[in-house]
Length: 286
Ligand code: C2E
Ligand code: MG
Ligand code: MG
Ligand code: MG
Image (tube, rainbow, N blue to C red; front, top):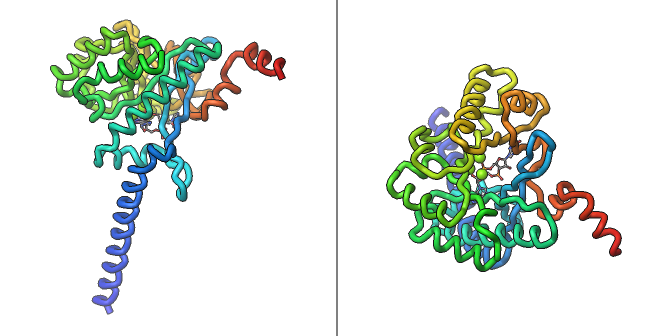
């Protein structure tokens, strides 16, 4: 009996593995077609100044409208894109789409704010990254100072390589933001070695900040450090008023999180965050 049960368990386990593998292979082949079929889209999450709740930046976050599985989040398909090399094509699409959208917003009288785009490690280490991004900026007509690239600490471990990439991007006027700060191979020497404009405090330090004194100490230290180094600092993942109050008390001037807005389709951002004058102007022409 024991034997039989064991065997069934094994069969069950093995079927489940097969299923996961199949699912992955299926997603992989779907992903190859997704870009040409126009199934990728961007959502945008506002970055807010605590002082007056103005939108001072916005982050582009990729989504995949899968024909049968619905709207998929990047956690499900970015790893597959990275494994298969599809990340290059996807990354190019994201950059172009984000720059185009921001240029359009600028043209339409939207706020003159930068757009933040996430880069994966493979993209970051692409030869001629800076030239290729400059070409996208030229094609879309967005000025370099309105593009902010989000990279993570672990991408900078090869210091000499990163230093040449970052210096070049900086010379072109493109901004660099350190995403998920505090969770990677945090080396404070990176901060003084490289041209970094902004530090994004990771959500994991914010989550329990109302109860956890250690998290509060870490966050207030990162904020103070960034200010001393003349870098901007923004906290990610603010969901409640209490969290916002603690950050404000610690003189964090910029935040991003569900408390103000989830990532939204472009039209919803316009409706919720563009100044009223613009909406009225649109209405009066109807
Ligand atoms: P990230 O760059 O750190 O982006 C922030 C993530 O946190 C987003 O998840 C966002 O929806 C979520 N978030 C924002 N505010 C809150 C909050 O208050 N509470 C909670 N619980 N979550 C919040 P999303 O869109 O699923 O993206 C996950 C990650 O996927 C991103 O983390 C980024 O690393 C990666 N990613 C997204 N878009 C792209 C892309 O176009 N290219 C690359 N290479 N990676 C991307
Ligand atoms: Mg990011
Ligand atoms: Mg990230
Ligand atoms: Mg992050």
